[in-house]
Length: 339
Image 1: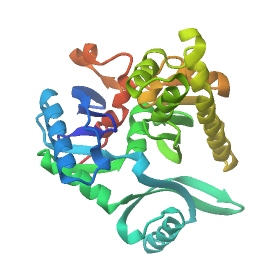
Image 2: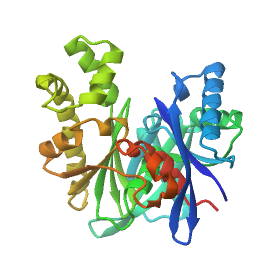
Image 3: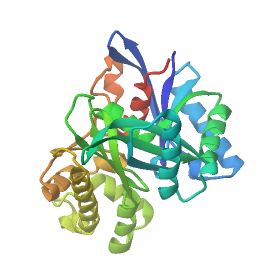
Image 4: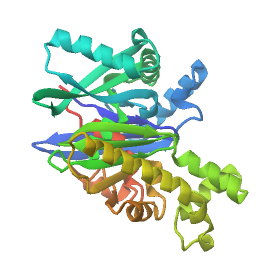
């Protein structure tokens, strides 16, 4: 089946289409463009219609002909947790997962759609148990996304969370456990990826918009200036006499602390040592972010390349070298196996 991956982000929309030849993937088309102001956060029909028109326009500009689309649920609007449960029959499993979901989902289960993925085994004493990634999304969110896609003239073929898509494009299945950090606009999502599968997820509200607000407050900049300075200079101590780096350092220290706590919790549950971190998301490309976090954590940290395992052909020169990572969700969706 021909289809493409669509990432409806907070500030931008990204898409990618791949073709599988043998065991290799080839880049067919990709594109991006600004999103609407409110995007999927809005409940107004006019805002959702405007979003659909933007998606339609970007798809046309990318010259993607297929209408079949795989898209992702915004990570900051879904509930994700890893649970450990006994080995059960299918009927018993569903009942157990419903009970687990009730413990961490703040809305009635009748208003959400649950999905799960077996990610491995765990031992508790002498008992063998299953580790399960449990994901819940509100029915209203799913309904909105499907309606937007249909208004854009598209046929939805798959929905999954952003973090799962990112892991597919950024982390090879055979790699040792890696921490993947999505430094987004509204939230930072921290995930441990083990054997190609997301085995643990933690989200924090400290992200790109937090950095911008801090710059506005501390440096007296307006929002447009703060965003421009952030993208141009990031946390580079050599720029602007180090003033910007000083302002951003406490926030980045908080993100580093949460990363460390997530790694420690994962290891306390029997996980292996984590030596490498892969960054993605819009904030990942800010100057000196990766090196600063590496110093704070004493870990190998790199910005992820979603096109690393894709044959890019003639399109390679069009991929933005400094921000290829923004396509992690779209490429991950395009790499999904759909029958």
